[in-house]
Image (cartoon, rainbow, N blue to C red; front, side, top):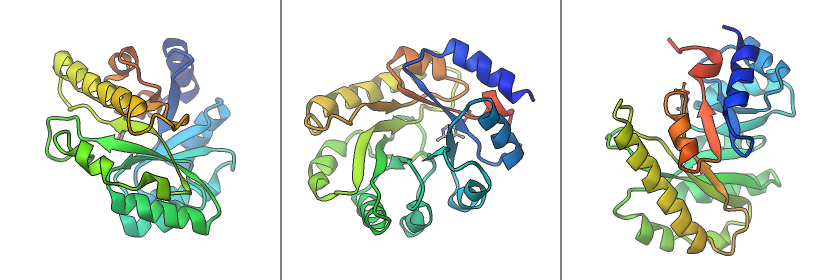
Length: 221
Ligand SMILES: *Cc1c(COP(=O)(O)O)cnc(C)c1O
């Protein structure tokens, strides 16, 4: 696995306006270090325990993105150092992130996750209810959170039309929130969508952050 070469190829193919997040879950720190040495600074992890164990062993200027499902009782473990939390999908979680960020005298960047896939197992705000749910959340009270945009995962299918339609759905939600609920939030700019298998389509649809694991580090076993 030539990580530097994989990253170089990816950087050539991805427009410069799109941030590449290297998804390093289950991978040993040697591989993360290799990506770091090749210039990569944004890394994504899915599991709190794993992130807490790896982060102190790696350079301190890494920008850590937590991209997995986050349990409220574990927010305190990553609040001291995490830069972005991608999969925020409840008021309860927002409150806890705000509380723990305040304890650490920090502001944590958050993305709101939407359930765009046609699959049971994915988390996120539901498409049929999110408007009421979001309108009832007192975002103004959260002084230690920056809502930076939205995140979603397309269905794990081959059907490109289905994936395209799910990315369109997320882009439409982003546009609607950007001109509506978050119109006074200049930091609401990120559309986190696209993984190794579907990032070109996501970028085509306006993604600003792609989360790439296997195309950089190889397949996970
Ligand atoms: C694992 C994971 C990725 C990366 O997946 P690859 O297909 O290996 O690129 C991206 N986003 C999330 C939320 C993930 O859990």
